Length: 534
Image 1 (tube, helix red, strand yellow):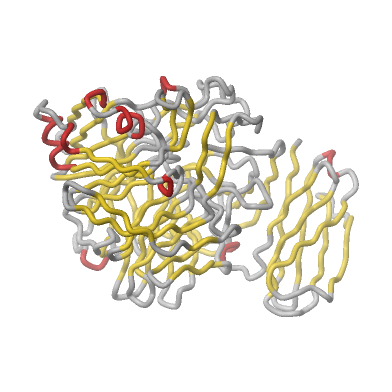
Image 2: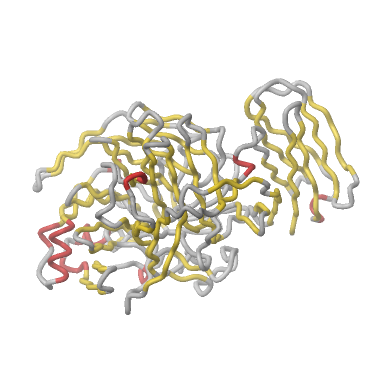
């Protein structure tokens, strides 16, 4: 669910001048299952090569009209079994289940995690007939995946394989449920009750969790007991939803998580660019790395090379503030759909870098999609793939299914339900460990120390600049027009180390145009080309 106040487009252009040999290649191949419907923002479990698909939306991006957005007709009220090898599917309605389970399991943006045979599903947002309103569900539902798959394929009853408990701490949507060793982590998300209204009219209440909620589950197959643990709360850095939280192997060899990007910043209606590392001891904010691509939830794959102590994270399409066009980094504050496939790699020292892969999604796909691993891959207990143990030159990692398919980059402000749809395509994802590896383009902005970001304020005719200083060296700021004419120049000597924000008035900024903004210190110079379109 996106609420935005941006009515203009800003395009910041930086040339990507560095490239790196890729540690592997990725290939995606489409497959088709007859009559498989489109779906986005769903939950899934898997067993024996088959998938159990639950909930999500049958339509595309939520509509602009408040009466139509997240309508009941777009809810998924059936369970679907998919066999991607035999290209078969089976379905069964939710109607045989108790009302509270039916309602939750037809919602969207649930948090979920499979532990052995059990799929645990938390929260989710949708229309509740019981409450006669749209709500975020305060439930945890346990699903015994193998038995449900077997029952639906063989057309027998599955009602005995669902159990549900109520807990207000689980009224969360758009967050992430993961497990580090024996403890569950519910990261980020929000409680959203009432009818979504993109114009921010008072038809709903919205409360971010701003937290990592930790708990243990005791489940004997009959009763579910929850033990809540210490909550980590951070109203600035954990104010995130609709993002990617990816299992990790950390540089010290321990299991952990990284919360990448997400929306919305507390003081800007834009995605986060930094990330948050989470482990069994706590969490830390990674401000020396900025993620420019794949900022909303999308299919993603974690791979770890033990020999190199490198953690690779792959992201497929979705929605982002930045994209690449022929080697040029393009900033669009309307945060559109993208085709980008990117890799974020953490080395043995903890340093992170972002690379654009030479392959893209075939269309504006990926937002709200899921990657479902093949079950025979060598992997750690948290699902991270053991890269070094894949010996074949070409190996099937798994499948991408569903998500939103958009007809264009920016459809949010014009969306009446026809510009996007729920994607029914499945893509096989192959890892290729060829000797003739491709070149991945390094996003140089993700490694510069200044981390310059520029935000025009058209109403006040100001440029707002955010940047990071590692020392107290003087800073030179130059703003010029396309014709080379300098319209602002200044030297700052009293700035602080760390994050700084400057606001400078620029005459006639509201008329639009092309500007070059340059920040220079004793060690570094960064220039962004800003195209302001009204």
